[in-house]
Each structure stands twice: as structure tokens, then as C-alpha cells.
Length: 422
Image (cartoon, rainbow, N blue to C red; front, side, top):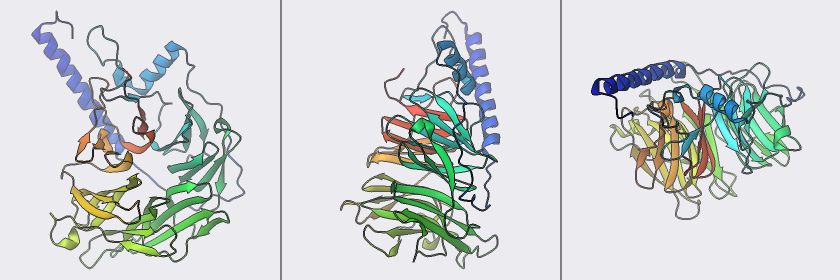
């Protein structure tokens, strides 16, 4: 701040900054409420492939790049008082990047070679080429896109409201996405996606009734060398919401089952161990602070993922509504897991994504700028502020190659962590 300003001027500047922050928060709160999905059938397998568009961000000219950054981060223009240049990154190295306008991003994935893909709630597929984001394609009908995963630069899968899309091509920049007809009941939408390789891809979903006891029906399909198949012998009374795992830990799915006689909605976690053909129900501990114990069992879970090969995290709330994390750790390379419950503050907001690469380095992201870090002992909020106003947009996706280089995406925002950048 300019040292010549008097006390009244300083107060006026601080007041204006506070008002701007509160207005931005109110606008974000209004935007983040709406979220839609579709239960429509999958697109036919013979539908025309969707080729890349010739839609790019402004050129890399310094002035154009600055204009694009200002469009993506309108609060950056009044970030500083005085002569100091606006910061590009927060103190912990979180750097917002320029996006095309109106991109409510729902997922992110990178191929490990520099290309990063992001998907939106309005049918947009974006690609980061190492320097800038570009609009790769807009899907016909602009369906909500939910999940993205790939095994490499030219093998990328997207799951959306209209079903599965497979991206293939000679290079990452020339990927063409074609609809794929997954087996099973097309009226049961698929909402979760994960895999370990080009011939080991899983997609899961389900529906729940709208009246008590809210009966649940699940759908789980698997791509192998023989193509997509409905997974046999998996319980069908679970409305699946998440699928994840590792080759050593096996495949895990989670979903909601019908409410019990007390009206409590509960989550069920199933595991297919490596080399096994039998799905096993996993018993997770209840929240010890909730009584009766049946109200402390896992209820609605909003995120599930491996934090490392021997560390697993489930995020959500108990059947009684208490917020928390279920943390699984393995001492035998993922063959078995021991679980513990960690409570969250009652005033906390939803967390919709979790990701990590080490037992003591895990991140969880969610509503209104929540980005939490687990250091092996506690969860703390990350320092994201670049301007004088906090980032309060909804985060919905996490992905990274390392803990020092990863992405957080959400409503009109894509942040890259690059420690050491000013």
C-alpha cells in the first residue's frame, strides 16, 4: 500500500476490498447451487465420431495472454494497491490459468506427457498443451460430462449424461471422440469411471427410488480384451456412485442402498480383490460421536480414491449426517486395509474430489474454494489467494502427475500447482 495514504484512505480502500469480496462470494454462492444430470439412454454405437474444433485461446503474444488472464480472473485487476505487479500464484504455488469463458469444469485428467484434459457440465472438452487451454470439441446437444480417464495420450475415455465416449487418434492434439454403446440397462445411467490400462476400464452407476425405502439398482460394466461386458455376480441392489482402486488393491465400488427401518440412508463399499472373482462387502467403522451406532455408519459419500498404493480415502457423511473421512491404510501392499474414522467440523462444506500420491500428501477439494491437504497427521486448508479476494468458486476435480504439479478445476477456474513460481 502507498505509504503516503492517510488512515481514512486506507480504511476506504480496505472497505472497498471487503465489499468486492462479499459481492463475489454472493455471486459464486448463487452460481454453485445449480447442477443437472440426465438419465437418457446411451448414444448409439454407430453415431458419427466427434472431431476436434478449430477453437483456440488468444495467441501467446504477451498482451493477448494478459487480456485472457484478466477475463478468466476478473478480480486480478484490482488485486494490489500501489505499484507492485499482480501476483500470478499464491504463496504455496497455486496458479490460476486462463480459460475460455463460461466453463463449469467437472473433471480433469492428464496423460503424463504434458497434455491435460478438462471436461465441463455443458459438453465442452478442453485441452492444455503445456502452455494454454484450448477448446478441443463441443459435443452435440451439450450434454453434462461427468468423468474423464485415460491410459495414455491417444486412449482417453469420457463419461457423460449421454454415455461413454472414446477418444483415439494419431496424437493427443488430433484425438477424435466417438460414442460407445456400453452393455446393460441403458435406463440406469453410468456416473463413475476408472481404469488401470487400455483393456481394464470400469464404469459404474445406479438409480434410487424417490419414495421410502428408496430402493436402489446398480449397473457395473468392464472393458477387457473381449470388449465391454456387464460385470457378473456383483450385487445389483446398490446404486453405484464411485469406482477406484489399484492393480494390487483390486477394484472398489461404492454406492447407496435402500434405507433401513429407521429411515437411514447408507453407503455400501464392495471390493474385488486382485485375482479374485468374488465381491466382498467392506465393513467401515461408524463415527464414534454419533448415537446410536447405526447412525454413525457411512451414509452419502461424495468422493473416494486411493491416496497412494497403501492409503485410501472416502469423504462424506454418516447415516446420521455427521461429516467425516474414512481412512483406510494397508501394511501388506494393498491386500488388506485397516479403517479409521476422522471427523470433520459440523460447519464444513461438501468435498467432491480427493487425490494424492503419498500417505502423507493427499488433497481434497470442494465447494467455495475448499482445498484441504493431509500431511499424515491433520487436514489443513491450502493457501490459494492470489489477489486481495479469496477464491470461493466450487472445485470439482483433481488430478496430477506429482504432488508438486497437479490441477484443480471447477466453476470457471483451472488452477495448476507449480511451487516456486512467483
